[in-house]
Length: 88
Image 1 (cartoon, rainbow, N blue to C red):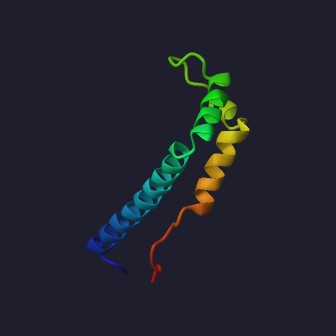
Image 2: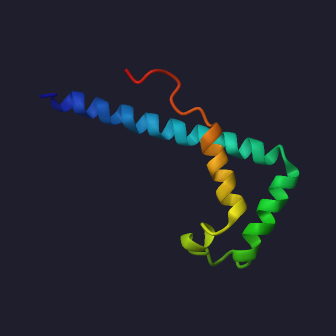
């Protein structure tokens, strides 16, 4: 049975690994969106169809129905690296 310190270190490792991969995926997706002004404008137009009043955030269910943002998120997850080395 691992001791308390080993469990704490394992928890820190998992927390770091999760934030690193999420952060890298977001950075990669933002880079590619900003490198393609047409895509950026299309995303902006599509968001504005459901989010014209910036003081009132639309429900997640509404945002999930938008095809271009959904496709952009899925493509970002597909091309993102994930883990940089073996997990062992």
